[in-house]
Length: 390
Image (cartoon, rainbow, N blue to C red; front, top):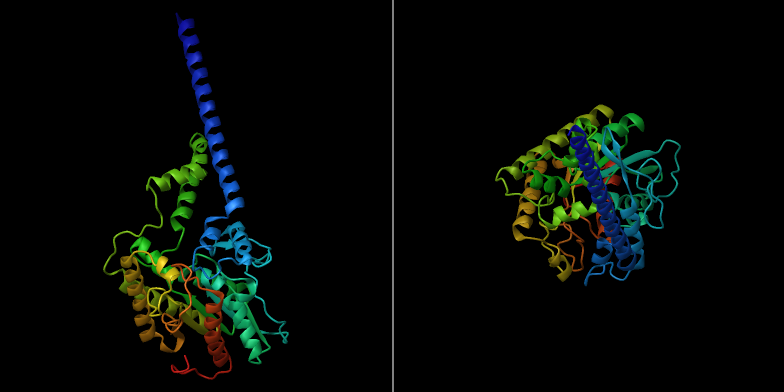
């Protein structure tokens, strides 16, 4: 009797093991098939971003360089950084290059001085150059403009990273000060990422991807031997696609708004800038804060393409309210160290905005850089810039 029970138990364990093995094999085959068809589809038709660039009215439609640029951008990776959250790995391509230290390459003439004055440009993907070739990023255009104005001892350093917010950038500045030293001027170019993270979290002071980083850290620290067997499902593209299709975990969905979110964001932005100004005073350099051009505050006549990317009206109104809150607080607290570019393109008829995250065309970058060149040149030559000149 005992032998029969033991034999039955062993057969049950064997059958369970076989079922588990077949299930894992099927899951692996499904995952491989999904990834394979996805890779083939991208190779034939391009990625989502590449196909979106072919939409009617897109400024880069039909331009081969942009397809290559997007492929290089999508191939880029970030590594964990204990001080700044994450930082880029090296990337080499025809139009997008990140050096071994993780800085987006700034195209600029050789500096004439052995002790150049540095200008740190901080921001997120718009400053980094998410939609621009190396030579047409804002930092590269600023470097070219400063050289054209006769300033040959200036080195421009692009400290931006995609997805960064003002808090990340303050940490980046602090890290740079103790490794590279103080600049002559630090420029913060922000707005939309802090606004969007406020929308997503219903309060300011958050960063993109913080839930993912926290999830990985907390789960990995608590994970035991047996739970480790189920973790591949967290990294499965099939599972991720099913979760998205079922609407179970849309990390980009904006929850119901809080009436006090935008006023809180304005005060948060003001207080963070005070912290940065304190650091700048201690280290002896100048600082400038710029609110980037904003699709929600612009009064430009929108092109059909720009209208197609605007999204729900309530979200656009929410973005406008928060941008105006930042302008109000910063304009009152830091009038000498703050510029708002929210209405910079009001007189432009052509397409400027490529999406809702502040990414604009290369020609728009040229206009942004022109204003920054005048401001930087005036500050580094100790000549104040009037509001009319801005």
